[in-house]
Length: 69
Image (tube, rainbow, N blue to C red; front, side, top):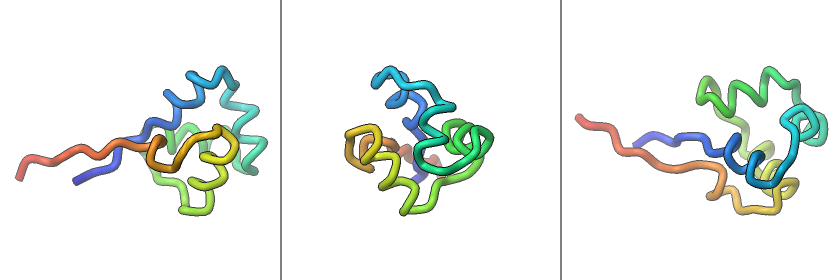
C-alpha cells in the first residue's frame, strides 16, 4: 500500500492559493509542493493543520493505492 497525496486537489477545490495555505500552516511553498507531488510526506501534526485549515478530514488529503508485488 502507498499513500497518494490529494492535498493539491483539495486546495484547488476550496479555491485557495498554495502560497496562502503554506503561510497559514507555517511551511514554505517548496515544502507544500513536495507534499502535493508525493516527494515527501507531511508530519501528522501538519496533516491535522491542513485538514483544519481546509475544513476536511485528514483522510480526505490522501488516497491509498495498492502496489503490485
